[in-house]
Image (tube, rainbow, N blue to C red):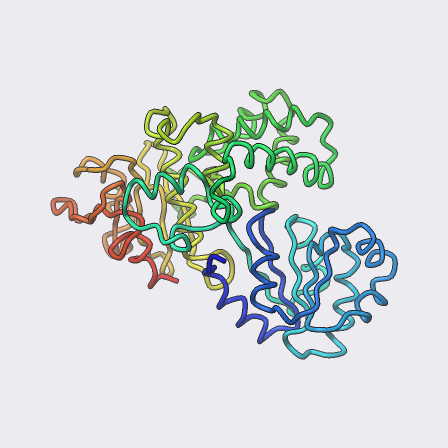
Length: 397
């Protein structure tokens, strides 16, 4: 089994809270992880229709019949459990009793926020990261990860066809999760929406334009995107701006959580096509941002992640907020070698915010060794490796 970076945080949370909720997209390894960390815990899966029916019909009897500690898998299929869990936790606040997992984050989190606020810890599990797969600065290894994606089964069973597995994943996701979360009239429309969304990776999100290209209403696109977000398939990078500065663009950018899924939706025919595709630069940016997000985490205690763009077109791909209004600034370039011209956005950012607000500035590119761009005070770095971007950001967590 591949060791997951979240394991220590998950164990610590279960030692401190009566309940822990682990969310994430389907097939990110939630069940495998919790069962490996707590092999002696009892286990029930609400993915089984009969078990889910028991939990829905009589949640009190269902929960009281379980031996704790207990893993309740796919807990979103019985939303009534959360209210009853509150009762049981209030009767006994001992930590380490209930560990819930769920793939459909929206209904799961709705139940948590309504019933378990203050009684549980919530953590999210992404697909495998470069660090978890021991991918360093070598371009060939990075390309393999970027192409194949980070779904654990694709790495546990290297004989699996990436195209067949990811294609089946999309079909299953469409049939199972989307239909249960929304009244999608046409799965063909939703499939087209997924592919149109992939064409906008790393771009500012325009709901009206996306809706026009898919042939549905803007409100439909908003609803569908909310499901993709809730299910851990995509995420939005919100822009950072000061209220007094009206020049800054306040539109978020769209990213996919996994680049294997992204390149499949984009129609990349082979790994060799990566560098020839017109969206290669956007795919590289998507990968860098998603790797930083995986490494630093999301939610309470994690550094804020932002984009920055002005109305004049000056842009920095990623800001990591290490203190109030203090940032590590990152520009993403798919080239193996960059020069000072690649730092235009970073220079504009320093000019706008002041040099003191930018504690470090990096260009995350495909170099295998870091080197300074002395004339502009920026360092070009690989993403992985001992001297790469992720290693340098480790102290920001």
